[in-house]
Length: 224
View 1 (cartoon, rainbow, N blue to C red):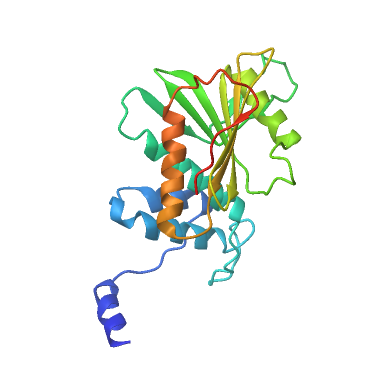
View 2 (cartoon, one colour):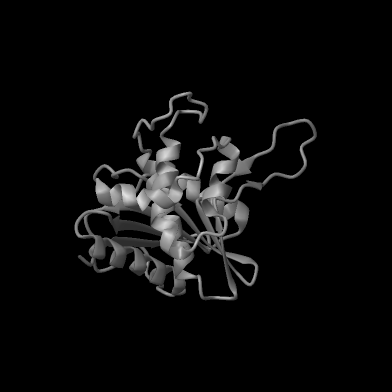
């Protein structure tokens, strides 16, 4: 307790100021050094747990963590870091696109993939993270329809669906009547932290490699 009080003493002049939900992300991200990022990520999760709509009058977090959102952030962070040193690649996190032509007073069609990777401004890879365990077969029809819609409307030839798992595993498919390659990947989220970090790094390296495998319906060797 004495050590904790001593650590908190420099913050005695700091007052708590409630933040509107729209300002939280900017406040947590602006000007923070990289060393603070894990702590800020934790704060972000706790803020998200304050209430279902961010307007809860309660002063303590409910500690309800949306694992789907956590997994999405985990995957998008890994993809962003994989291309951080490239000047030719831009990683867009959860961009929203209107994909229809002007339709008068009709509502627009919006698509929002988790990650879109552009090379020299041209869309190259679309990535979508799914916090679910596919039942039996790795092919989940609804997920495939969704990511193929991204490919069609955004003119992307490479799509990657990422699922959580106990070990890395990859399935690759090249469509017979369209120039599109679909990858289904299991990302390790169980076990030692270092093993999970290595799994995330392997995902990033795989996304940096061009899709040159001409085989269809084949499975890459798994890696523990």
